[in-house]
Image 1 (tube, rainbow, N blue to C red):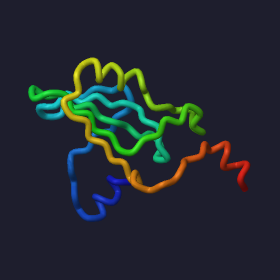
Image 2: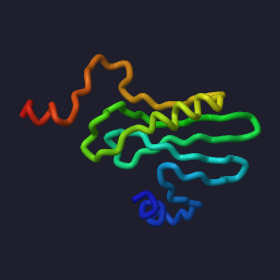
Image 3: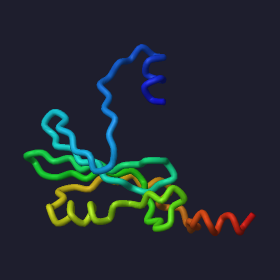
Image 4: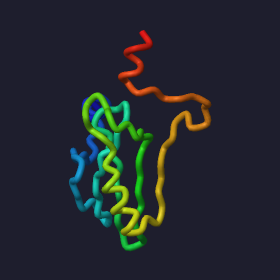
Amino acid sequence: MVEAKLQEHRITPYTLEVREGQREQVGPFDCEFVAVNHSIPDALAVALRSPAGLVLHTGDFKMDQLPLDGRITDLRAFARLGEEGVAWMRENRYYALWRHTIAHADELAWRR
């Protein structure tokens, strides 16, 4: 989807398709991709290792242990990275200041 939009605007950046558990060397960074559960399919966090330290970047994620697609946040990987020593964790938390609760998908089916 992103590549098609970039081609439409005649932009040809370097792209790399990755999967959970994969590690890639990108410039000076050793990148490790970690599964996170979210409403966006196949969401990933990325651990960036450099001589300056380990940075963990993730978008918004959930701790849903029964997601509809069966893909849960890889808490073991987060624990392992924590033991390794995270210098900085960057996380996007959209709507974090809103007062609301998130229901599990199964509960939403009963509310219809």
